[in-house]
Amino acid sequence: MRKLKTAVVGCGMISDIYIRNLAQLFSVTDLVAIANRTLDKAKEKAAFFGVPKAMTIDEVADDPEIELVVVLTPAPAHYDIIKKMLLKGKHVYTEKMFTTDVDQARELVELAEQKNLLIGVAPDTILGAGTQTARLALERGMIGDVTGGVVSINRNQNLNSELFRFLQEDGGALPYDVGIYYVATLVTLLGPVKEIRAFTSPAPVHEREFLFTDEKKDSWQIPGSNVVSAALKFESGALVSLHVNGNTINNEQNLIMLFGTNGIMKVGNPDTFNGTTEILLAENDWVTLPFTHGYNGKNKVSEPMPFDHYGSRGVGVAELAYSILAGRSNRCSKEYGLHCMEVLKGIDIAAETGTTYEVESTFEMTTLTPGYYSTVFGGFGRGDAERSLV
Ligand SMILES: NC(=O)c1ccc[n+]([C@@H]2O[C@H](COP(=O)([O-])OP(=O)(O)OC[C@H]3O[C@@H](n4cnc5c(N)ncnc54)[C@H](O)[C@@H]3O)[C@@H](O)[C@H]2O)c1
Image (cartoon, rainbow, N blue to C red; front, side, top):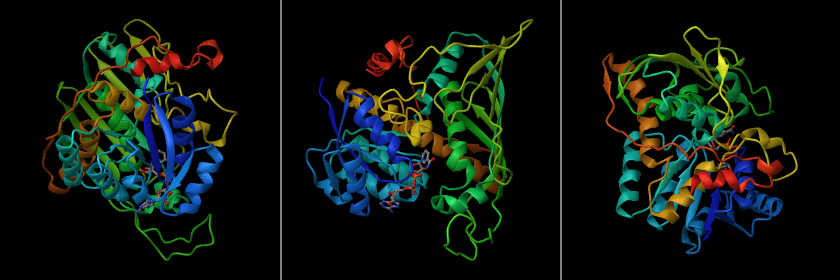
């Protein structure tokens, strides 16, 4: 099997898990280069993970050997880097959100189509054992037709923005930074959203000094909406209440509860790969479903690492690589990325205008083939799960 020559752009916090998994977990990616704004950091990461080359971002674009570029920069930098790579004929996978502007995302979708290239968009947690098990259970009709749901996620995004500086920028408010995992999981489970009504509140102006560094800054305000109360109507007819609250405490209470004609389903934390799916049928107690899929987020390829909790990140890149080789569309597709983004931006528009926002974008996705696991033979057979991506 041919491996895709792959480069990673961005050497921040999330890059370790991607680099380790793309270099060591998946056999379809050949990680040949690491790039960053500052070459020193790229050299450091390349040396640590044994990746052959450290490059500037322009060198990645100009290298004819590189076929697939994985963009791990904050969202405001995505548009320029993705466009640059597409124009040079490279397939791209990008961390969330796709861009910070729906029109820019649409432009990139069109450019990729013109150039016959694929784009993959995070989050790829939806390809993990948790969400894929929930999706298969819904497909098999375990709770009947989903008629509605309640979804909630909270954090203290203002406190978090003191430590994680990118949260002070566009895309840093809780709905975009974390709510996206909930929207991505909902659309993976229920299909596209059709209409939105919403109320939103901004983050407060943050006037404290940095708690975790010596740097002083008078004040900042995380851009966009930091509290969302939205009603989503799906193409299927399901009605879901979405509550995302970044103006509260960090003790995360993640809730996804779906109500069907024959039962109720609770879906585990969608920011992980191994959220458990629980089912309640009439006259029964709650039962936890066994995972039907692999990519449960457990490290199988190296000694334990501090970043192991980021799980199976990169599975969307591997699935994209198999899709490129097979000449088909990928699951975390550009249409999926655009749709997740349009839903979040549509919530803002619905709130601002006090009207119903009609979602234009749509997407299709198939469930991964069940029955392939990540840890058979104690991890030796990890390729088994990879066969579900082929
Ligand atoms: N940190 C997390 O827990 C986490 C989890 C999942 C996804 N993500 C996503 O991954 C992406 C990166 O997050 P992170 O935590 O690694 O961020 P980070 O701030 O730690 O690192 C960002 C990297 O991007 C580079 N960069 C920043 N601006 C750039 C620009 N304009 N041009 C080129 N390079 C630029 C920086 O040099 C750095 O290497 C974001 O989209 C984030 O939403 C982060």
